[in-house]
Length: 250
Image (tube, rainbow, N blue to C red; front, top):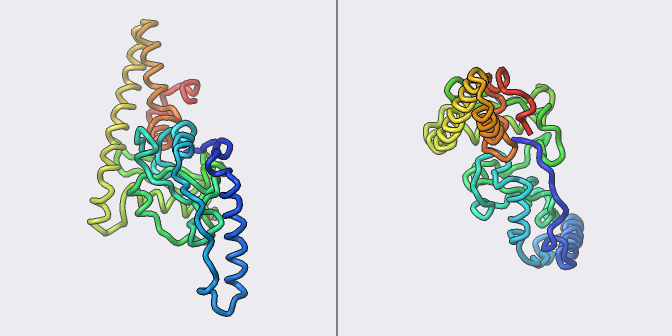
């Protein structure tokens, strides 16, 4: 997971009927809280869809067509789900709230627990992910792991637990681990690409060939870019920490 910059509200979510729906949902929640029989309170009519082309295009541009949780790249946000960061069951007024919508891989969205955890989760558009959430990856790109930088930070701990579930499955559950295997395979493939790029970069430096070095720098920078898959995990590699110049990291 990396920090993201959310653009202004797409026009489809800023229409008057959307704003009215939010107000109607707030009124509905108040009426349910005071009504003797909440089930008979009329549910506000949905004004449309939050899965509109301008929303998905904003995800492509600003969230880099990646799942905001796993950082798996999908080429297009049209291939992903639109996830509600705070579940609608928790707060119906956030159903069409732009700040509550994120692109998520379908499998990640389905595996994510529906119940909002005590202490919440880290919001990549609002929280300092880089300082609150740590990532590590083992030799040969195996065993990706996440943990809170501060064990008392409940939101970071909850986020780490969620990412560990999505990347590795549930401990002791073979089916869950097999269900997440493809993500681990894809992560290892990316690890190998980054490692080979670092070796090529070092070779070009030793050879003193300016053109080779320029090509190696460009390739390495692209693999470790915020736009690339698994940015947090790849930048956590020991070889990256030890041998990659910081000016190559955007």
